[in-house]
Length: 282
Image (cartoon, rainbow, N blue to C red; front, side, top):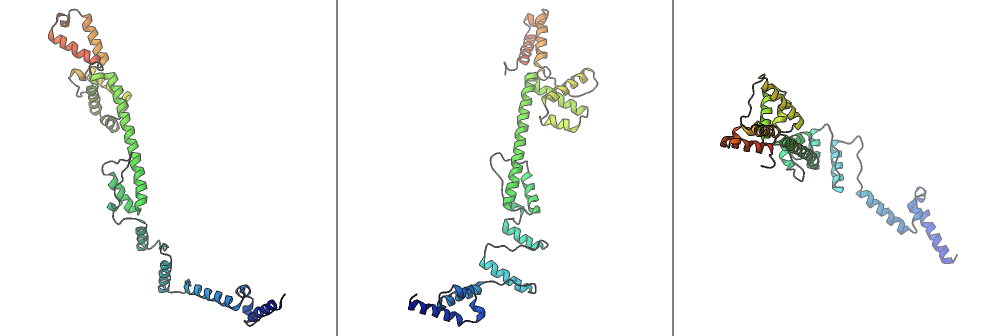
């Protein structure tokens, strides 16, 4: 080691020994190469302490805590104070910041593909949401799911109605509407459960059940046990099978006016042919 290095080492040792013994063991002292580095580091720490915020103790007043919260929010604008859940005003303030509107109308409209609502349903959902304290984002997610579920149910119901209608038309042909109405009239006349009447009126009842009720209506009418409104039109009283049976009877009965070219008989045959072959004459 050179004389200069020895001199520098002695100087470094001298400045540390000039400090109080309790300070000489500080890491800041041991890590500093010279007094200037030590005091610069101490200055930085003092500046840091000056910018620090002391957390009030349990003995602090509400004013001290309010000042502490104010300083914290100034330093960290995005920080939000946890409200007292027993304090309705604090909770309302927090929910407003999170996006809950003041009134139900503030939720806005919910639209999109495969989303639909019953009449007045969306307004009801908004009223429920404002009572529950939902934010706009929460309401949007909730309402969209409800709208999608209702849309899917509606699509399913419409598909079922279409399928049932095709089955009824295939079996009843042009008399489908008339016989359907007769079935509905019968159900009302005999005091059928409201669920059955609703199913018939909404056209959502399965075709097999409609056929069963229609048969009951026919049996009741034949036995004159029940009085209900029957259709008087030809299109409302004969199925394709029944029409074909009458056609066959006319063709076998050579005494029938049809074979003599009577106009009314020929018109009746024409109507029977339409009823027996609804697809051909559609």
